Image (cartoon, rainbow, N blue to C red; front, side):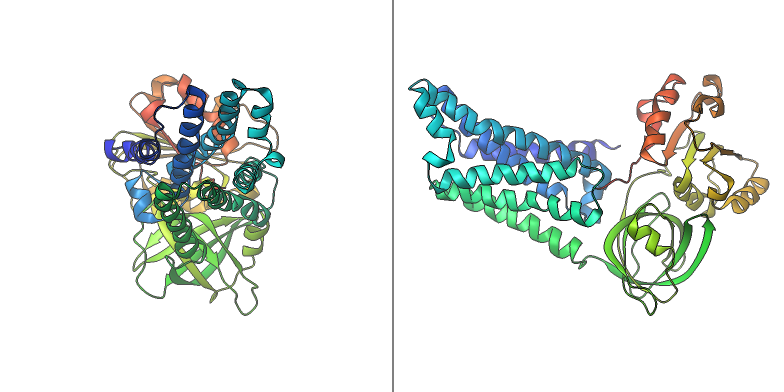
Length: 417
């Protein structure tokens, strides 16, 4: 990854956090009170950074090194912000303890204080609820999305806490930024103003519980390349009730003029409903995102696909065989789950530079070592992984044992909860 995108997010976080602390840094105050103020404002800066990093904007994502990287930092800064803000009243109470335990309790207890303290604790409770939803994987998407939205409310309530304390000067800038980031996300992303209109041109089943959908642009198409993904919302059709939330789908082909193809596997309520979609349904598309399968890498490549993870590799092969030699290992549970097999075999028969291995793994936990080449056969290779998160997590240490680690191992989780 180039140095500028790699450093962009750390620099952005440092500016927001450092600016907040520098602007309000306490002078001539006892240690614990000063620490409490620094923790509070540092947490505010981290929350602002977390809000900005949840914005799904294609240009911003390219500048910051990719949407998947933005979301890792979004989660990390959110958790650290919560810890800072939780420690903020504890540090203030520790300073009050030096005078008396009763005063320390009054500092923490909302029942002995006024609306500013109530607002502060309310913000912390909302943060706690939002973070709990973040780490609860079993929640349905709509329930998770509603609970996760409490994080934005928590930021505004926390800023209200500071306004009630009378700290109006620095709060104005923080409030403007918070409202701007939240509004940007709501209008551009959730309400779809950044999306382009498409229509479903064709649908075909390619495996059990999996279809490939061709999308035709109705206006200027988005700029996309193989290895990327888009966010798609399927609207209501004549016999299709619609699935209006934006979900990420990896491109299985980029066809001229501006036509896209995506593979959709039934993994949840929305994607299962999409299996019955019909041509003519209106679609909104945002993107494109991602830097997977960087075409600038000239070394021999080892591709490993699991299930629906075959789509970015298929898109690359459909776009023209790369100049590098390629080993492609395609893993799936059963033959009925294997998508695009005939097309992959036809490409491999015509392209001597492509070595294809198709492997059914069954329902149990397979021994993945048996299907990986030896370390000597992977010297000088770049490895790309795409598939279920559990498969990618199981493969990484095995590939590292074979010398494919660090910058030679590429993967994206496409998990944006």
